[in-house]
Structure formats: C-alpha cells, structure tokens
Image (cartoon, rainbow, N blue to C red; front, side, top):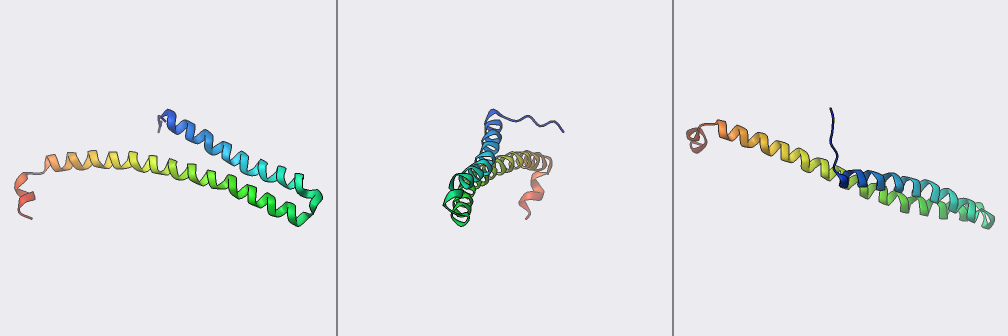
Length: 95
C-alpha cells in the first residue's frame, strides 16, 4: 500500500530520528566525558542524558500515533455517513 505522507509527518519522522541520535550519542558522549570522575558518576549522567533524549522520542511517537488515529477516524466517519445514507429513514425513527 502506497502511503502519501504530509510534510508535517516527514518532519516529525526526522525529529524522531534526531531524538534517537541525541539519546544514544548524547548518553555515550556524556559517559566518555565524565568517565575520569568515576564509573558510577559517568553512568548516572549518561543514563540521565539518554532518558532526556528518549523523552523526545516518545513525544514525537505519540504525535505520529495521534495523526494516524485522526486519519483512521476520518475514514470511519466517511464509511458511517455512507451507511446512514443507505438506510431508510423509517428504520432509524422506530428505535
């Protein structure tokens, strides 16, 4: 199935990939930078920076899911309108 993505969805996908890079490389860089101060200190700072980057990954993923949800709701609305147009009016008023 060919899926045409909007510019906003493409930018959102780019930002999500950049967030992954920020999370992984930022955590690695912080670990290497703070390693002279001790393994435990470097590990804690690296985990903290990784979680900050991962937060943005989650935010952009949720935004992408909401866009897909909206598109699916629009499709369902069109189908429901077609179904209600095909039903006779008498059957709706009797219930």
